[in-house]
Image (tube, rainbow, N blue to C red; front, side):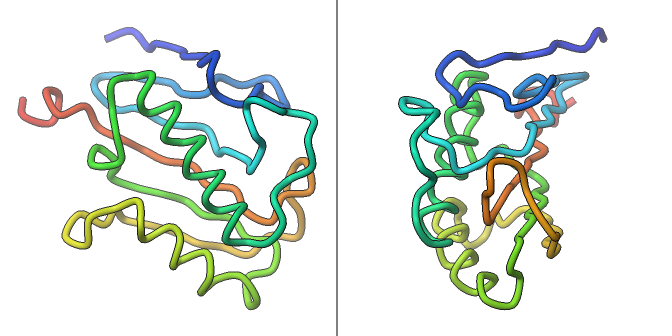
Amino acid sequence: MASKFHRVAAAPRPVAPFSHAVECDGWVLLTGQMPTDPAAPDAALPAGIEAQTRRVMDNLGIVLGELGLDFTDVVQCRVHLTDFEADYASMNRVYAGYFAPDRLPARTCVGVTALAVGARVEIDLVARRPQAASR
């Protein structure tokens, strides 16, 4: 199966040369999202880790939705935090609200020294199309 490269007009504009998502054989890999408001890309980032996490997850939801998917299709996440010790618990409280308690994806969460646009959090996802999973 050929790969499909997706750019989503409603999502935040990329800050580097990448697609919002790449799809191959039912697997959909979403590029990490920043807490940028797609309607105001040059606006200041939201204050605080909770607001930034919510914006990142909402941005991921925009990309998923454009591809006909939602958070129930997510099987793996990677979270990057610039202040792991201070932000881990608060990020988790917001993040958990996007998933059913019995459908939590596999996840890695790491502390990093810096992220693009001065963000405190970046999250990327791997999803699987339901019809592909039933093959």
